[in-house]
Amino acid sequence: MKKDEQVFGIHAVRQVFETDITRILEVWILDNSKIMDLLQEAKQHGIVIHKVAKKTLDKLTNHGRHQNVVIRCKPLPIKNKATLEELIATLTVPPFLLVLDEVQDPHNLGACLRTAEASGVHAVIVPENNACKLTSIVRMVATGAAENVPLIQVTNLARTLSWLKEQGIWLIGTDEDGQSTVFDAKLTGPLALVLGSEGNGMRHLTKEICDTTVRIPMFGKVKSLNISVATGVCLYEAVRQRMID
Image (cartoon, rainbow, N blue to C red; front, side, top):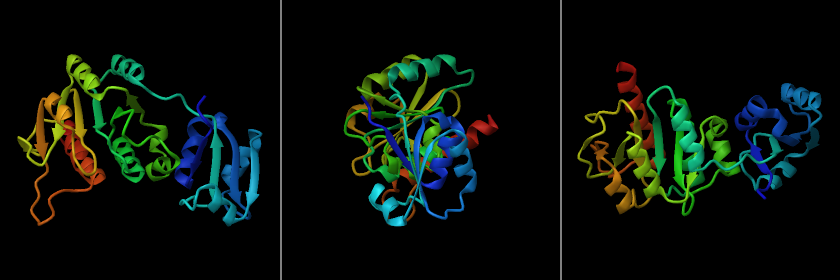
């Protein structure tokens, strides 16, 4: 059975309150905190409230950026390929997906989720193994986006990408030796943008399955961008094109 989830950081906590307050089991909040609206909502729903010192919050979060509030929640079911299939079947607009191939750092995953949610991505797809999961740090960095954009964990990423192609979704991978720049590529219609891990980029098989690859032009001495920055560049170029289209 999946363990209860811990969420901290004011924006991430507020998003849980707004999306499904019934998930919340307990609240730990700094004594004399000014977050009165959350306290009032928690009381109205009979949620246990602990007013504690900052050192207690530091200990609960292993000195994470808790911003004086931590909650314990019922776990959400893990979203898998069946969730993705259902999502694709119910969309009434062209699918817009983000695929992250073995991203390891929770701060990077959280930042990618935040940008994905802001840019209207329908789902973020990651491999089940050798990739960061939806941790409390990911949720904190995502500032609430993790509650709104599905993070799909699949057992076989290559097979899932092949299935997406069968659904008519164009797969565009990012690579420093890409066939064109991201600004020259067509990013409208059913689309999945595929980005690789922090150190090694896309795996060879992932790259082979993509319909084409694109690169982000680099004009300085630095050869690559942080994965979350690269994600932002690619997603918002797609947003720009889709708005015009």
